[in-house]
Image (cartoon, rainbow, N blue to C red; front, side, top):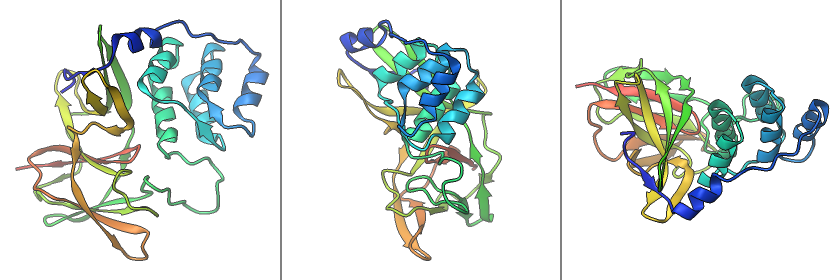
Length: 261
């Protein structure tokens, strides 16, 4: 649950919470730099936030950037939050850094992005094939003296798509082996906040938080991946039966479902 903490060194945390130096620019200059040929960076996002641009405007710039070079380790995210960047903008940065959110106009027709399925189909014994729709999450952080807890949170305590099949499969698009890029995950229900959450990163005692773009090991479910069709499709099947609860397929976006008794 959200009460589990990933420990990091005190010195690193205090450094991350230090002052962030921001160079003020005119709006025209800030937009020119963010939309230029160079990759969009954390500094570009901070500049736009400091100039008062709303989250929707900044997210549109992130989605439309030809390339991004976002730094999204724990210290980087703490600096962004301290600089006034909103959680939904940080979530959009994480999505682009993980390979999702292809810029508009990048080729004709739907692109298949490695590690980010353009389409997800849930295959079950009781319901046949069901197309899953992506659900956007918001990121939450909790700072303590020597800990940082980070989650993606999704609205509602139960997914709309339900199954009694304890070993469902997923058909996804990926030009590469999906393991390490696409994850089957469990979601933890918080009745108080009326949401479901997934912890980010792999915590290690006094070792910082690693692999921040990936779900925590506690949420990951092992699966077998078999290439099908033209080689750009894969069938993912959990290696063990799923217990009743809330789950999803995560690739920067969450495709959620639930398993009932």
